[in-house]
Structures are given as structure tokens and as C-alpha cells.
Image (cartoon, rainbow, N blue to C red; front, side):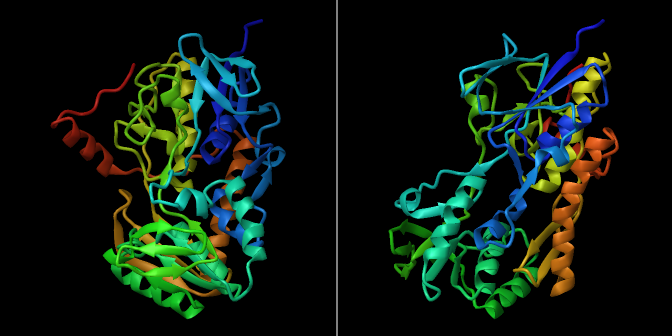
Length: 398
């Protein structure tokens, strides 16, 4: 009887779960998923964990194929030459192929005092730590959310809807991803919820203290609780393991998502930098890249040439509390259009549907591996690759 091919997936987020499930198409593939937590974290709901409207957790038994082995531990080093992963608990796991799907988290803030006095919420543990702090703050206390992106907007909206006094400090541009028309409409909606929105060059945060946020224009905003949503980074596992990474620390790959250093290592999700032209960090892209990373591994096992990956994005869906939301539409290359939809309960239900659909897709792939094929094609990526290569199509690994 032939020995099974051992595939390790490092990271049990959106990309890692769908990749692991898809690998079970072959009975002769033994899949191990390494993740530091025993339950799946819905990162797109972490702002709800802070306010208590959702626990942001899903049981892995619900979304993982039954024969996937879940190892609750943290990978501390990948030995590409020896083909094994060292765990924080002290053990090691051998592999034939590895999918690198460690995701992303908060970038270490460089602003003085932010690391000591502000609360990031990009991971489950961070959001869990913040929740009792918010609950303990008096209802009249001034809360400050730093960062005018989708996470900042959603967090500020959730808090304001609960009657909290919230200031959203954007630093230059509010809702930078949004079309200017949508930006104005969303800002008005937040103002209606009672959120004070500060944007412009003078609103760049220059310091954070235990009780205040300092701005570039000299203002000092009283802040009983400061929530930091500005900037994302990736774990340094690839760099620590001696693998090639980009400036942010994402694993550098070719267009088949294969590491530039090792044909047996494939990347998926926020931690991948294919051709140094990474896709926007998002659940939307992770759910498309994850299956294609698995397909690359399955192709190599079958002795076939892997296909180039492709991802097309439709835009961004942002909740504005539990009773409203906005959808900003974009072209497949992620450049926004003038089209957006902003409204009350129907838009809130749409965003809720998006959150639930990701869990449904993972569950469906677990039961019927190979069935998730909902990614879009971005024709602009091929053009960008030709420009990057000086007019020559990008080469890919055999």
C-alpha cells in the first residue's frame, strides 16, 4: 500500500481552512492543520466581539473535513531542507508539502505610547482583551478609534450604536478605499450615529497616553479607551525560517503561489506575495486564494503543471452598526467605481449574509472538497505582470 503524501497547512484562518478541505479530494493525502487556537476565528466579526453582539468563533468540527488532523499549537520555524515544522510545544511535524497561510495581524505601532496605551483588535485575543475594558468604562467616557479604514469604521459604528461617545481619528483620509461619493455618505451616517469623525493632515496621531490621544495639529483628545485599527502586518515565521519575503514579511512566490525558495512550499491568503504584486488583504481574497493554493499542491502530487492563480475582487462591504451598512463596488482589479449602496436594515442584512456565507462555503468545501470555485478573474493582473517584467509575461515554475 502506497504511503500517504503528508501536507501541513500552517494557519487555520479563511485561506488555510478552505485549502485544507480542498486537499482531501485525494484519499492518499494526509492533511494536518496547525493553528494556535482550538476554534476558528471570524476575523470579520472581531468588532462585534468587542461590543458583545457576537463571539466571533466557529467550531472547527463544523467547517473542517473529518479526516483533517487539527494540531492546536504554534509553528515557530519551518525547516525547508529537512521538511519539518517546529512547534512551540517543542515537537516537530514532517511534511511532503506545506501551505503557508499564517494570515495577518496588527502592525506594531511606531507612535509613542500606542503600544502601551492603545488596544489593537486584529486578533481574537486582542479583541477579547479589549471587551472588558470597554464594558468597565463609564457610558459617558470618551472612546477613540484610531484608523479610518473598514475596521475603524465598523468598530466606531458598533460602539456609537450602543450609545458610546466615540471619536474616529482617521489621519488624512476617512475611508480611503471608498469612492469620494461613498465616503461622504458614510461619514454623514457615522455623524448621525453620534461619531465625531476627524480627518485631514492635522489628525495624524503623534502620541497616545493613558488618558489622551495627541494629534499633529497640537490637539489633545481626552480618551478613556483608545482602540488602534491603523495598519496590518504579517507574522515573521517565513523570515525567521530563512525564506524569501517582501518588505512587509509576506512569503514571496511565483504565480502558482509556490515559494521562490522551495517548490514544496505554497502560500495562501494575506501572507502571500505572488510576483511581488500581492492581492489586497481580505477575507474576500483569502477565500479565493486558499482553494488555488491547494490546487497547486494537488497538481504537483499528480505530476502536473500547476495553473497560475487569479483573483478578482468585487469591492468592500462595511457594516455601520447592526442596523445599517454600505457596499462599495469595484472593478475586478480592485479599483473602486462610483457605484455604492448605503442603507439601513437591508444593507445590514446583506453584510450579515456575507459573513455567514464564508462559513457556509468552508462547510460546503469540507463536505464536498473541490466544489468551491467561486473566484473571479482579474484580466488586469496579467497586464501588470507584463509591465513589471518589462513587457515579457512572468515565468512560472514547472
